[in-house]
Length: 293
Length: 293
Image 1 (cartoon, rainbow over the protein chains, first blue to last red):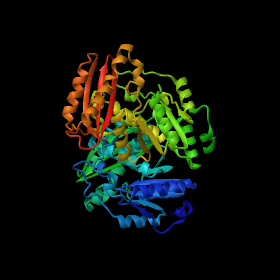
Image 2: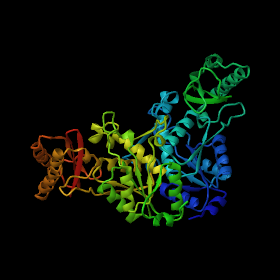
Image 3: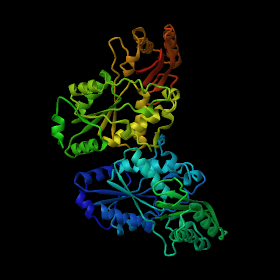
Image 4: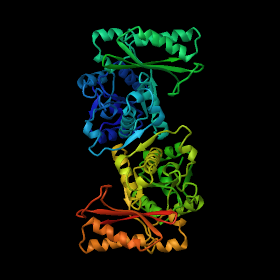
């Protein structure tokens, strides 16, 4: 068993664990020796968004654990579980380059036994918006995140702002269930043209990829209106809808203004607000959001 | 802050915690110093059944934590939350006498904030039998037990066999969610006439109390038939039903034979079997069970 300092010093490649018990043992042992442990949960197909979480975790913690697990329970029956991009050797190389010390890459069978029957239901925060379009999605997210929290009893865990509703759901779960892990949310990382980084961007055809930055442009339009003094949510949303309607390939699913930290819609932007949207571009769903304050 | 040895040595009265964070800190600190910590979750109104769990915990662990919390989410709207017996000073005295070092006695408001919205659903194990009669009961049990496991990250937790379905539900949750706590189940403790100890026995009138041992007698009848070679579950259940039907005050709700460790009914007792029953006696519900093997 490596000790905490040897885990923290280990460079070049993360130690890879498939077995939840062995990983938990290594994490607890590092903590016994005084190490602060951080967790970056991912589904692999890593991009700079994930890697910015690894960087933040490295800065805040002595030991960084990244999990790579394409969690079947958060995919609906007609969703892209089978085609979700997988690139484990490249992912491990990227984690190594960013100094991630431990990687958890379980088999689906070791995460969900044949008799698995327990799910975490986060209530109202999980029901609207993404939860309305993907009815069992957040149940799967909450369940796998809690499982990861038990396997990797980190001091803090890092999530990206791009999946805004997910951050609200995970924080609600952690608060409601007294989970002793600090949840940290880091800014969305964008391509040079503003498109929010997402593993699903790989699905886009070149033609669709050229259209995708319209989503960020509509969020920037919201920022411009806000900067010009507009505080009426409906007016901002209508302007965004109009700008996106000009792009026939984009099918907007929703645009909404939430009181920051919640899924409660606001009519007036008198306090920090998250404007969030979802759209289909061909067969691919894209989501994005932006903070107005 | 007491250290592990001072916690282990402390006699006479448990240290009482109302604040989840302070208790968690004390537990983690004791574990850092090498102590093995055990948890006995209770709703108070302690009897020898609970205290046998404390004794087992004391034998197996360096530090015993008992929680006393009448958990509102496991009571249905027409159940006995308001009238459930409460006797905190006496409970703390009993815990002290049995050498329990730490007691967790939270206020309901510190366990369930006004925005609480997350529940743990254990699936099929929670749906039949007690779950059919008390539809939200096991959701509340699983949720509060998981909260307690996060507040008190014990090495093992102790439950009584009397609540058989609860033990199956808690074990299923712990396995499915990778909870790193060993679940131990201890035998039912009985009054001298065989009635399973239960805080709800206090509801019984003297007349009802005289009738209540019929439940245990029917389980002993099952044992006698089993000892005589009967392996047909239906025959055993019908004999129990007939014996209980002779007592007009008792309203049998179910009697069932389960493969041990499950809520799967068996037709033949060719492997260890739990025969379980529930009955109403006036306004009071009583449950009991017995292992045939």
